[in-house]
Amino acid sequence: MMFKTLSVIGLGYIGLPTAAVFASRKVRVYGVDVNENTVSTINRGGIHIVEPDLDIIVRAAVTEGYLSASTKVSAADAFIIAVPTPFKENHVADLTYIEKACQALAPVLEQGNLVILESTSPVGATEKIAEWLAIARPDLTFPQSHGESSDIRIAHCPERVLPGHVLRELVQNDRVIGGMTPACSAAAVALYKTFVKGDCVITNSRTAEMAKLTENSFRDVNIAFANELSMICDKLDINVWELISLANRHPRVNILQPGAGVGGHCIAVDPWFIVDSCPDQARIIRMAREVNDSKPEWVLDKVKQQLDVWHKANPDAGRSHAKVAVLGLAFKPDIDDLRESPALDIALELADTGCQLLIVEPNITALPKQFSQPEVVLTDVRSALDADIICVLVRHSAFSVIKPELANHNAVVDAVGLLR
Ligand code: SAJ
Image (cartoon, rainbow, N blue to C red; front, top):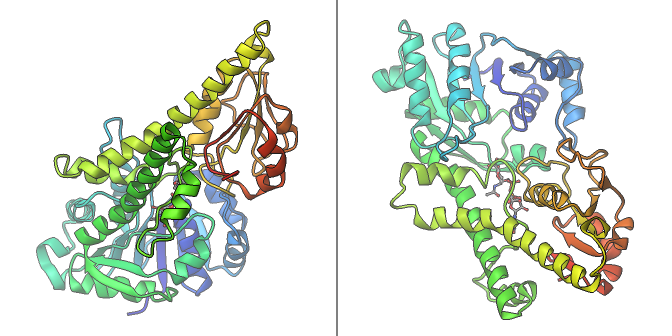
């Protein structure tokens, strides 16, 4: 099976690297995005997201004519849908973007095409795609009605790459391939084998959907265990990082690290898709989400306790005289991504307390617009040492240089174990 052309719908953190890697293997890729700025940036050979080395391969692919972007879907041998699947207020998955992608690609669909859903989705979403496409194109046959002989092949192949390492992990990671029929799986394997060096492991679409949700829930539950331990240890006056490193010497124990909470667009979202499908059964998964979601508030309380101590020591000083430094705003170490970041939420709350807030985030050059207060400034790591209270919210490598001074400061809230 040969795929000469590919349409990738959604040119975000997953769609753009995927499109670029296919294009680098000389597949003609038509990228599609609703955002015109994204489209024009890519067509100039640029990128609109931060991911190491992505700029180099996008520029090369555009220059050589293998990658172009548009707001319209072009006909192609295969289609990859890589759009967001957020959840609504009540933690129910919102499939609107996937449905819109289906409506956009349906008119150009042709017999023999392969449609792949890469977006992380609740169980049953791939079958929904098949239904939507069948309604839009009654002239074509689909796997749910025609099995192996269907005109259109459909599969779920979840992305599993780690932001910051996307280009390497796209190629090296094993890939779960969940076709609606064996023929759908075989077509999807043939497509991914264009560049995937890992194994392409075949299953059905529902299991593939659940596999992705399971991977992120596994991590969420394990981080919740670490976060719960950090709160228990605080009560019992035990250093949680020492405790975890001791426990991890056991050959079958591997506890993750506590932090300021769980951020990002995946781990804090995907477990809810399982909870929504099986609310009575998914008890640990729900509880883990609740524990992790409560952690930023707990860290904030610790800082407020330090503010109370400061007020006691400085009874005549108003709140605006208190200087608080926040180290880190990103959702995890050594990236610039502030979306769904617990550290950002904590800093925003602190900004509202009326203190002077020194923010140190070495991976950005300007504060996000939400910080409107004049008492909030973005500064360098050494200036933070002047603060009355210092809270470490992200373990950026750039913070290591002030460890000795930090260890001698008398009001540090270290949510991530920088000082361990
Ligand atoms: N975190 C901790 N303690 C830890 C590890 C992480 O508090 O010991 C926090 C991080 O600081 C961050 C959050 O968890 O706030 C998530 O970070 P992460 O590095 O665990 O994961 P993501 O969201 O960057 O990427 C995850 C990955 N999934 C798994 O590792 C199982 C990635 O492979 C997925 O492709 C991605 O989700 C996704 O798109 O679903």
